[in-house]
Length: 323
Image: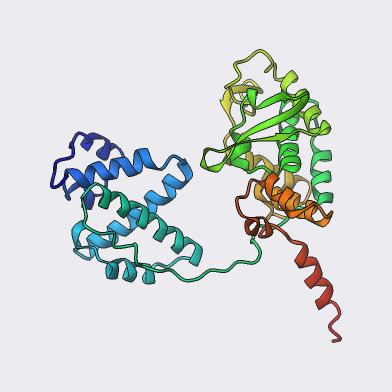
């Protein structure tokens, strides 16, 4: 398939999605490839947003350098990459986005070769993640501080408990539905929709199950459709929960407010609970493989990035310096 043989019916979608002018002017195949890559291939909304931003930024750079789509070479990509004012991890994400984008352009015969395929990024070795850990004592204090004499307190305690006792990502918690809290083999479970469309079932220990049940009963969620949101926004006018789901950002703001209220460090974030759970389990001698399975990591090296035990060892060592 060559030239403009692919249907050009995607022009309205291109306009709607803000199709870059460099793509729009490159012919029907390029427009089709953009629509397919942007709207169909990348299913995760976070990845789609990040990749689209990276590609748009690069194409704007190309346009400022008077480069048409077919004029882009590995040297062009390399020059852009070298001048990109970002961290190594962000630059690697940009390069990954460009490779994915140009793969689609090549597949749809909008370009002959992928100019990003041979460009190499810097090696980036990370032995420990940067997210600060929330401690067990801090988690206990946070749970104890939440008053549960109203529906908001019951909801917020349940959200915090899910983060503490499942090591789930905040996005997965925000995506829970009423049907996600279920009984399987006579045991309460939570079904999470994780990154990449994976569904994971995590047992709900007795205290977590009790917190969730108290919230569900108080919010009258037993009879609502199973696909309706579990954790819901508050209508301040009516001081009642709405039918709309809390977003991950909304949960993050709630957590920041709750943690600030008891004087916890401002750098703690929703992801700190994931770090805390993994570090705590490894400190207790739980096998890495089991912790990896709970966290949903495909590679044990990823799980190790969440382990903060080494910081305590280093702190003990530096305290012994005889000065």
